[in-house]
Amino acid sequence: MTVPQTLLAGLLSRAGSRSHVFPLLRRGGQLSSCSSRQAGCASRGLASQAAPSTISPPIQTPVTPAPAKEAAAPQEVTINGKTYQTDSWFNAPENVLALTSRKLHLEKDHPISITRQILESKFPGPTYKYHNDFDPVVSKYENFDSLGFPADHPGRARSDTYYINKDTLLRTHTSAHEAQLFGARTSPGYLISADVYRRDEIDRSHYPVFYQMEGARVWDRSTVPNGDIAAAVYADLAELPTHDIEVEDRHPPFHAERNPLQTEHHSAAEAEAIAAHLKRSLELMVVDIFSRAKAAARQQDPDFVDEPLRVRWVEAYFPFTSPSWELEVYYAGEWLEVLGCGVTKQELHINAGAPSQLGWAFGIGLDRIAMLLFQVPDIRIFWSRDARFLDQFAGVSDDLSKLQRFIPFSKHPACYKDVSFWVPLPSSADGGNDMAVSGQEFHDNDVMEIVRGVAGDTVEDVKLVDQYTRPENGRQSRCYRVCYRSLERTLTNKETNKIHLAVKSQLTKKLKVQIR
Image (cartoon, rainbow, N blue to C red):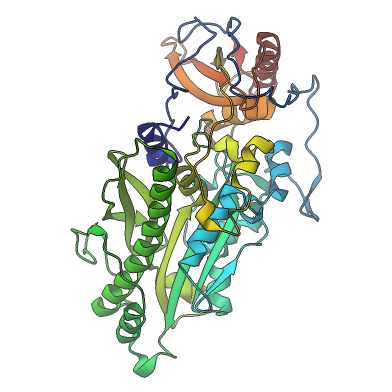
């Protein structure tokens, strides 16, 4: 059994969006539900029918509901051997903190690690140095301020980010280490691969922990011949391999309004040279990834249609590059966003104490590329310890020619249950939503965090399906549909009801909502 190309393409095209709620997907062509309630109704679920496993009985993973009494927030937490003091900003749940030690990008023969290995091979040393062991706990300055994030940027909110205390957090992107490496000047280029953390929606393309790769290449005015950056960049470009893939690039290297040149720091010739080197480097990387994906598909799927690879550049905006672009690939009938990149903002080099440097940077999601490369339909699968998953990739790290697509080892039915509640008014007598982000209103991510904290990886998808506001007092009713589905076994209705009851209990305790 293979994952339909159109299903996975749709998943990947949206996987990078941090605000998009991905719709419920069909598993094996069947949309199973154990709930007949319509959106907006009170929660009620009926028993789902067990689906036969495709192989021997699966591993029985216990499901632990939330404790009856909520534990007090710890005064300190220990992460990878280092202890941190917490304060009122602390919002990192135990199940997320427990994942900081997994380091899937370093686990031999794991798809995330294999993907990292393939990407690193396109940026060889000694020009590029690899950094794969940076600690996930960083300062607010490193994660936001050093990159020029404005004070009111939504990424700074507790609704989006896991804080240890008001000045310390779990990094939300690998760019948190950019200034450190620019200032260190240990190599002309670098790659960072690491786990990053964000409070987010629940669906098959989002997880509170995921993996990114950050790459950069710089040139220094004080060291290149005659200080001629453009000539030095073009000389390095001439040393790069070429490819024969069709690339669409309709836009000019920069545009005064849409994609501006940093005129106070870079000449047009310098920006054009850096852009050319950047684009060739990333095209080579993407061509390699998609060529491997096609080779694996041809080997395992006799019906696979091998179409010529098409690649295009589109203008984009990022807070720490200008001009900026996204690279898209035409795959399975639609354009997929693969990565973002651009000419690095000169302020980053200046703030890092390296004002004579200039260059490019890019960022790419390792999970997204691994899902495409291995045809993995659900991001939760990467975190499975099931041997039926891990053994499929044994030996690939040592011999990339053994790379093959993921073969699903079982199918289990979904069970949908609704939960409806009244959101407390900010001015209510009980103080309103005491778990909302400081100074902010009720947030969907608070609901997601509670559901994930109770149900763990037995929850596949949560989405808002109905909302209503009373005109007489402005009080809002919201209904969320929760899809429970284990990757490893069939959930019984009894245990699903128990989990869902615990979810409602925690929503009431933590968000002060009134269940309908």
